Image 1: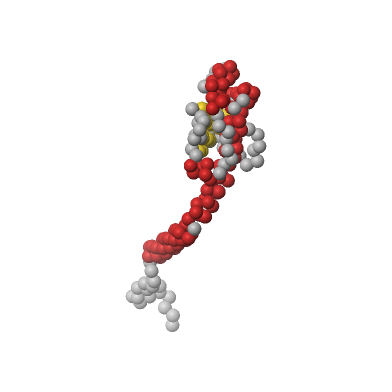
Image 2 (image 1 turned 120 degrees about the horizontal axis):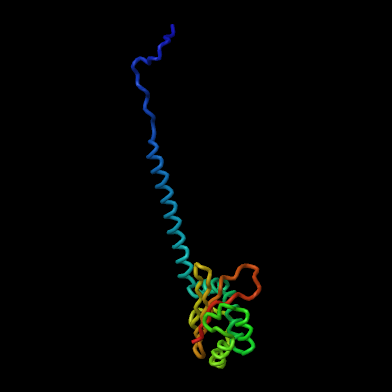
Length: 183
């Protein structure tokens, strides 16, 4: 007859077999670490192999990628420098950018200062890898949104322009100039 007692006759609860929970977690983390490590090492080896096979081709691809990224900033810089080369352009630049009043309080002050450097400004060339590599190009994007573009040609004056913010996709109008330095 069946005993109605809950007593199991002194037998204990059987022990679970297999890894405890902390062991499963440690094993999962270890495997994830190994996968990440092998992926990183493999990626570095792949890129190193590409560079080793054709270093100039790899450099050219990297420079073209960078050039495509900074081309809008460079085109805006070229526009500003072209305006600085003529008195009419300087008037238009000063009128469109009230931030220049911090350095030159009046338009006549700006025109007087710009008349000193207009003849020394070199025409700005197209953006090329050679220009980026060897001809004094500097482009800085600040986290606050400002963009500083500078160029020091081998002959002529260096020009540094600070724009209010980065160009957004689809923007076609001119960006505001907040700072200008011609050396």
